[in-house]
Image 1: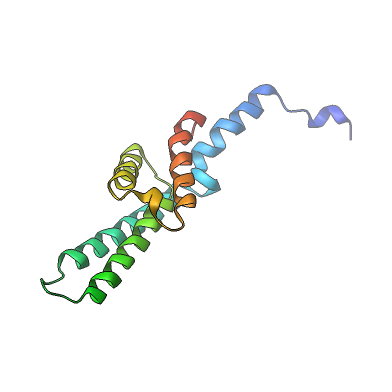
Image 2: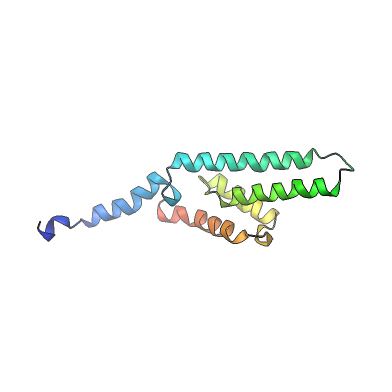
Length: 125
């Protein structure tokens, strides 16, 4: 085959660079998968918060500690999940600030995910 047959036009390359990420969402996952992952993670943090809020006064410190650990694990999962839209990104920023997430054990991947979420619209995703 002639080498010239494999040359791509600049338009084709630019189209692939912009179009494919927009169709697939972050990390190559389809946008619907991102939405599902976000929805599950958001439901998990809400369940954890509700369990903690339902804790009766005078409950043991051990029970409180277990529920708070479960909430922080759910928070990590939510912060690590790619934000599928600007509202989700805003919520991630709020939770990161409100919970001082940078102080959590294992926070680095969560903050890297937040950084990627913030940059995604700049790159057509």
